[in-house]
Length: 268
Length: 341
Image (cartoon, rainbow over all chains, first blue to last red; front, side):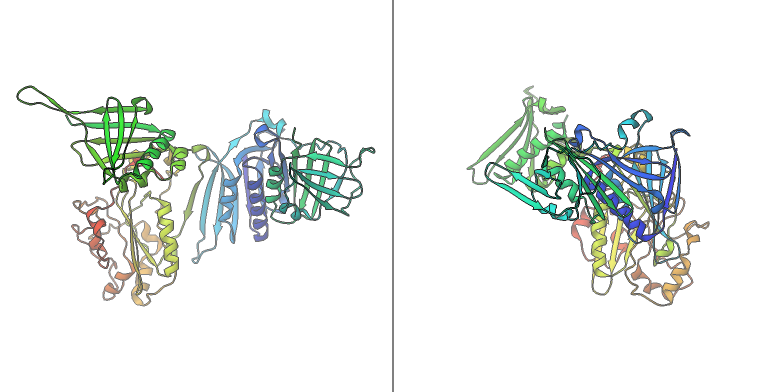
């Protein structure tokens, strides 16, 4: 197994750092999947995560000007690593205004992802900061649990969320939406019920919907939604929200070169 | 045989123990440690004798509990048994048990040890090494980034980064260069800022005994192949210019990192108060910026101040104002079991 990649473009480096920060906010531990064309940050829907799952995908050629990898075998040309997300984002913190960033898979007494940052310095030679992030290699037999989640045909529909940011200031518990481009975010307690109405949201002609229902509901844990929203550092260029009635809500965001899918299950 | 106490606690036990100390600290400024077969009693009474507290930890509270009393043999064969009489100032012991939640999380075990014939109580914290998640970071800084860089031989020292960070933050505010002096592991590391307006000196202990360091899990992360010295020096602005500095800069070219010639007449920085120890293969030294002006008249020399072997750390840096507690109680070399932060 081999992996070596290099970023020299400042904008790409900053973008990669922001993605890493976002992942660190969404998942304490995650899986990094390295394949010839893509990098994925994966969180699978285990009980430990509260049933939440995440699939973040980036095209490697949009970030790295050098990228070489060799998977576990020729037929399975992929690498799955488990790491603590915060370790990567903290290592990348030193990469602000760096000349170059190199990431490679190494074995320094135990498997590591070595992040090597070449900093500008006053002298002719560069200052190099190296971080060895411990990782666990995930064996082939567990890969099947880490595949891209299939979005079940939504009971309702998907629609665009241009104003994702606004959701942050609300306490949300229920999301309901309908075909007319209306989204309601509701919180209900014994004493009070607060509803926020969003209108005129687009309905892309994707997903099917059940004809009988006027609104699709899903009852979710506020904290999971807030955690998801807190991780968003940049307004996405496109945001879709799919609701599977009483089952889950699926967010599909597109930020420039990165797509992020986030699944929040309904409270049982 | 002296009266003694030796006990070992886990992280969660330390929390309870620490809470007891905190509770007793509200009563008195003095704490008695009183071990017996019933267990370890922490006792105190206030100065006006209006409040008394005693917390007795039974032997089974501890992971390990060992104690003994002093048996005094007398002529008439009536032996007297004297229990350990150990009184501590709350001011000394309270800070140790301050961040109890952090201790509970991070401490593997805590050892307390004292003997009646020694005038100290030793409390040792052994931190958990979470190898599985420890990130090892290394920064390489070339010698040409420094105003002055002279190393006698390849050196690797370990010290507390948190303390260094504080010092570096301060130095940024002063905009003055820092000089760093160090020697082999176990000897103190000294950082010195000296300009017209501000003079600051910080002394940090370093981990001693390289060979036992190799057995500590944390050093597995340290690249054993690292040969270069990690000398860190901030160059916030040159305030000394002139020929002497140029001379030094030239002489501090990278090739001097591996001098074939040994540097003679340079003594190592000594442990305060301990006898001079010369090293066989050349000594390490570093000259501060303030001594540059002293050597202006000898530009051709090595530009290093000759330090007498007998001089202690304080005398090497002549401008330090009196630091009475440092002079009397120099930082001891950190033994590997000291408790890595």
